[in-house]
Length: 431
Ligand SMILES: O=C([O-])C(=O)C[C@H](O)[C@@H](O)C(=O)[O-]
Ligand SMILES: [Mg+2]
Image 1 (cartoon, rainbow, N blue to C red):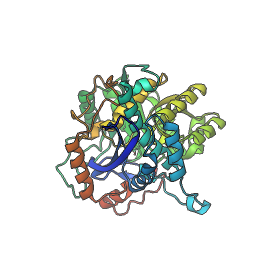
Image 2: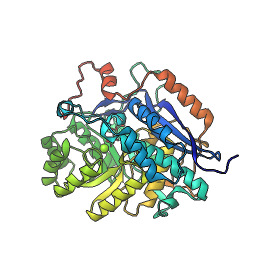
Image 3: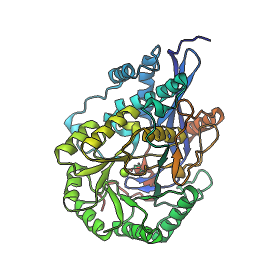
Image 4: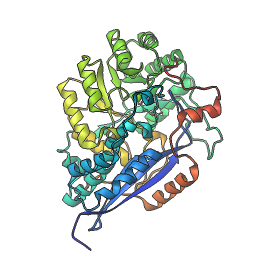
């Protein structure tokens, strides 16, 4: 075997795993969620892994950039970034192309984020390789652990009991459309995972029903930090009316109204700090928020589209400079993403809130040893080399087979909702 650690080969494997019928502002989750598994192999036979988005545009961008990394050292992250940027820079959009674009929650559709997403996909796998070579966990490569475990939040969704044309047995969570069902969902999730805070994905039902859901949670879990996230599906007026109903119960208010201007209008008349994963999603938007006097007070980062673990560390420094809070957003994901997020969050001294994770909604895994275990709502930071998790090849083959047969190539919550309600038009803000 060669002693050279130069990158010899990169494999990208699209996968699909079961995802429940979760409601959101855009519509409803499809029965299968897509991801990609990235493997970077060195001439010496080491394999660094990562997990990222699995929609078609992302797979195309990964395939386009991968050959340019062959021959690089796993330490050459800056050079990797330059090569990726040169190859997958987004096409320049004309003003008319921007007009009439629908707000989308689908991660593969943010064209402007392509470079950051591809850089992140390769960066984490290269860090995994670096850790294996240096016999150090990724958190040590990021400067060392500021905490030995990372807190996560219960992420509640309104949901149906079954998918339209349910392709497998219905999930164990059942329906959640009323405050009572929502509290039961929370009790079950808290019982299984021990989370110490709760987020409700809103923007799906009429806002007063969702406010009643939060008030029921406040009664069932007195003193527990609560958040609500309508994904910009409320007007400024609705946002202000609902936050008044929720006086005294919210830890933060996530993306109530559309756009930074909408958020600024809410911020001017509301005491609860505003958080976002929709209007501060890159460094240019960070600057605009700062220029406007920081109406958004908490940035919910996501290393998958902010450009990786190191870019999120840079973001954390900026947040500290501008006295902003920092936590993490998530999309449907498996354990590699979760463990990468855990290394990152352990390395960031300023982590002001428990992170989001969709993990409880997934019942499949792609790593050896099966699902990651939470203790009192937190995950221990691995101390073994690299990310500290390895691919389960049988699981990878099975999830890839799901991908080949599921018929989904791009996330489409709106199209899926039309199967239940053909008149659903996805117009936002809806309420
Ligand atoms: O905090 C958020 O905005 C999200 O987690 C976005 C996701 O797409 C979520 O709405 C979902 O999975 O339905
Ligand atoms: Mg959000």
